[in-house]
Amino acid sequence: MDLDIAAGEALGVVGESGSGKSVTFLSVLGLLRPPGRIEAGEILFDGRDLRRVSRAELRALRGRHMALAMQDALSALNPAFTIGQQLIETLEAHGLAANTREQAAAALSRVGIPSAAERLDDYPHQFSGGMRQRAMIAISLAARPRLLVADEPTTALDVTLRAQVLDLLDELREQDGLALALITHDLAVVAERCPRVMVMYAGQVVESGPTAQVVARPLHPYTRGLLESLPRLEDPDRPLHPIPGQVPDLARLDGGCRFRNRCSMAISACAGPTPLADLGGGRASRCLRAAEVSP
Amino acid sequence: MTASRLLERLLQTLPVLFGVSLIVFLMITLTPGDPVEIMLADSRATPEQAAQLRADLGLDRPLPQRFLVFLGNALTGDFGISFFHRRPVRDVIAERLPATIELTLAAILLAIAVAIPLGVIAAVKRDTWLDRALTALSLFGVSLPGFWFGLLLILLFAVQLGVFPVGGRTDFDLEVARVTGFLLIDSVIAGRPDAFLAALRHLALPAITLGLPTAALLTRVVRSAMAEVLTSDYVLFAEAKGLSRRRVLLRHALKNALIPVVTVAAIETGSLLGGNMIVETVFGWPGLGRLVVESIFARNYPLVQAAVLLYAVTYVMLNFTADLLYTALNPKVRL
Image (tube, each protein chain N blue to C red):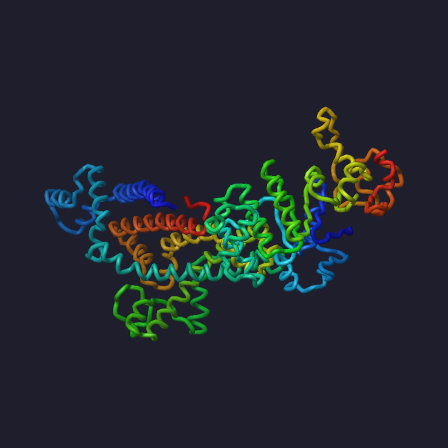
């Protein structure tokens, strides 16, 4: 696994449930829960290896410079504390609190919550779904971090709210130079919002590259499968092709391609090693027959 | 919780209390043995005199009427005369109650003070040897019989080591003027640190004996509640905000984990108040529990009746309090 995100950039991370999207980025934030652990490698933030900094230093970075937004704000926000308390404690934890209530109200109105100052004393359950999602993002962004890992931030929302939240993230990216890692299983969202995409399958990156190119001409059968399983507005009669089979048991992997048991293009060489190969133009694929995927 | 919801919840307790008083009334009335015969057993009363006594006591009236009289008297705090003490039941109970409350509060506070840290540690160190050791210890604590553990403590700390007294509430030469009936409070009022210390030393062993099973139970409740909360998204989110581990655990996690703990603790307090007969007997603690045991043996029905009713009311009220605390901790319940 090798990935990088620059300031102001949006990287889409796509894959089905259990493909390791969330785990990958939780480990970037140092939030991997036991028994999960990082076996090897380095995680560079501003040139510092986060695996080598102390817990306290990591804590000082978390929330301050790199933040997390979660799928379901109702479970991500603590039911026993007000929105204001949860926002202000982030500021306090990073020594940014001056006139806290005003700061907190400003942070809430930045994400488009009306009469923000009055809503600080509300509990999460008193917010509507869309507001709650915004409030959670406001809390994540309270300390103006430079990297936001957004883990399915819109999956729990309906279509209109989804667009609102995504617009908000775009805005923040442009205004503040926020680097965004948008984790989703929804390729359509990525196609619309993220210039670059990384497709994950069974814990590995199987393909990465500029989104427009990846969507137009996938270089891995799994990416192609994902695209074929999506309905298209301009061609509603096109038959959908779900990918047959299931993600392999990650505890019992051999050294070969992890997708080969579901792949129509599999050949005997697929049982051997399949490294992520640089194909030029910023594109990379793990498929041995990458050139044949999109004829 | 709004005032009307509060009132509604309070009104819900009425049928329970009515039911309990009916059972208490019937329990005593339907017990074999005619109180008049018992009272006149040693005298040579004529049948006319017996009938007169029966009428005086209201025992010749129909059962429903007698129940209403009992209920009306109970509401005004009149539970009749304690046969044994020849004084109003209310006064006898009022005299003994503070000792029992003092012991119960000490036991429950001790239990909470032990259970919260141990439960949190067990949950944080989940599935390590420490967690397993604490779980085993709490199982041991829950299953320990109180009378045996109490005697063991007396043998070790009172008889062998002599650091704590064998029983009673205080040393007889250190008595202070009774104001509230709570010795710890009364000795503060009297400005007597020596009496306060003596009361505390007398309180130690019975409170430990009474509180141990509760401490063990609450440890398990804290552990499981905390373990569940620790896997929640909001704990992960709190960590992602860069909060200190201490703040995440003690504020974000514990406040939510305490919600079920509070309910169990309040109900346990009720059980301790009504279930301390053995501990009070073992330690010669002059509380309500021992009074009830003595009264049962002496067939002192009015007192037993009043005590059972008191236990029931306390239990219901503590459940009500648990609901209130639950509301205070959990904003979602506020309506």
